[in-house]
Image 1 (cartoon, rainbow, N blue to C red):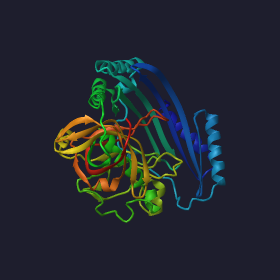
Image 2: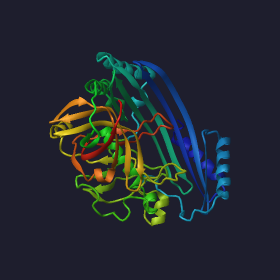
Image 3: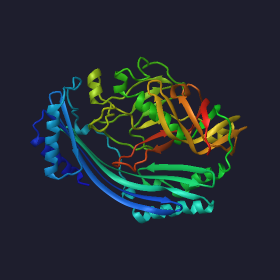
Length: 454
């Protein structure tokens, strides 16, 4: 970690040496540690630190980008030179006008780092794994998974005076419990290590593996299905990428085209992008240094807003909503703090009121088939159960499904009361925690299209 003062020095050096009309600098540093376990013992323990700098150089409407994973002064100057040379060779981007200009006092103060998490050591992670393995031994199961924690430092600045800096930390754990013919899964992520109970997590995964032992087959078809938060969040994530994205919307490729202000979902569906929710991974600014804000995307089934970055906002003569991804970003802006408003019933009550249905722990290998209509496919995994007369009775062999998210959110049976953060796995690439907050959801007549052998 280099600290805010050194980050300012680096930015100033780039600005002074740049020949471009405008220049943007992004600094990403991270330190992270990971402990992996399999077959009830630790098989990998790694510590990683890395730094990177990315520079966007702009001449008129020509934009060049270059990056390096070194903060050595000579390497920074080389990266700036590359960005400027690349910019000179580019075609003009007719949609570009200017980088965002933000006053420093516009940023909301958000708690993003907790000392307990930063201090979580190799030995502490080993103790956490020991707790998990003890639960596996208790049920004669085999445990697999990981425990990781890390700290990231993010600085975004540009030659117009924008400067945003934050250090943020998180901890993440995922657990698979495996029996002879069944598995159970759970995961958790948090800013504060004290918010995670490793034994409780392991117990949840173990119970799923035990209860789904000796799974039976039921024929594919349309069933009432209850999706726990680990599965439910994927409906929201696909919506975030392909429906609420202003670039896709402006190009006429979004389901929402022509539907803003109109009812698109069941009136119980309210979706908000909330970067300040304490249960989520709160963060103050996007990757252009624009302040984030709470934005209602769907209110009681009515489509309200799409998310913007500076480029899409310029094109539509609106303002950035603080949803830019890191440059270069050909995909467009994405909501990274999605929250589905909870309902009134517990998961147990939702199950009790289901005469016949399927309970799904999570999805596996989901993919979008039709980005415009939002049809997706995938499989169930690590705990799929049959519900009969209000009780979970048997484990089931897994299903493949093909469904339309828009149709599903118009066939809502119930929405759970308790919302849970599903964290994105931070084990690949730079450390920056994201996640979606969702309750369990019940959907009528969900299409399970085929079965599996396991």
